[in-house]
Amino acid sequence: MKIGILGTGTVGQTLASRLAELGHEVVIGTRNVEEKLASESKDMYGNPPFKEWQKEHGNIRLVKFSEAAEFGEVIINATKGGSSIDVLKQAGENTLNNKVLVDIGNPLDASKGMPPSLLPELSNTSSLGEQIQSSFPQAKVVKTLNTMWAGIMVNPQMVNNGDHTNFICGNDEEAKQTVRKLLTGMGWKDENILDLGDISSSRGVESFLPTWLRIMNSKQSAAFNLRIVE
Image (cartoon, rainbow, N blue to C red; front, side, top):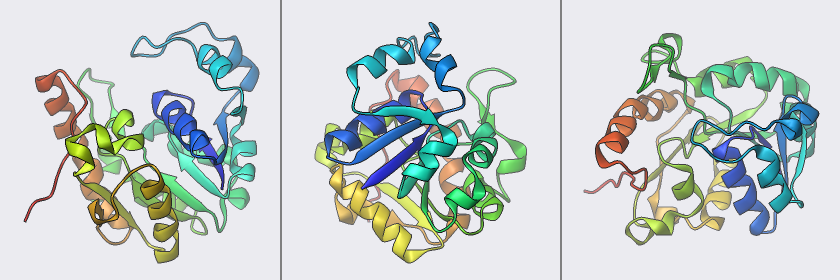
């Protein structure tokens, strides 16, 4: 499958490398290709500049957001939630029409320090997933993977032998089935992918992030996840 990933941070890199490893054709999108490749800056976690990752993943092309969206049969939004709509507009509404758009972003606001809270306009009675769907009504938005660390997204076996929960929601049933296949391909057990319903369920899964961040700080580790037990 051809997959266009929007966002060159840790999440975008992790997903790109894993999906390419599984045999998918993957490109990764950024705002300015030349600027990104010239940057010497480490990310907020102290990881090396993007160009160092690129050298090790020559099979994954770095392209503009619009090119990534045009290339992909499936588009993955791995950008910061506060800028996701702007990025998707750069990708182009017509390019996104009728495509599966996987949203794993979270609308976090770190303007008042750490840990961040949720952006007020994208919480409680709204969500990033809903805003993306309403802004791009012809796209088939599916929310998933936003409640965990990137390492677990692509390797669920690293926690409890893979027996833990990933949520999924969206308005289009066929699109959700396409995303399920991608998830099971990365090692998720189908019975552990819990469908919460339509895209309004993004409110619930995004609202978990402040709690997730507190747990991470308490444990001093991101290698954990939720498991629904009955």
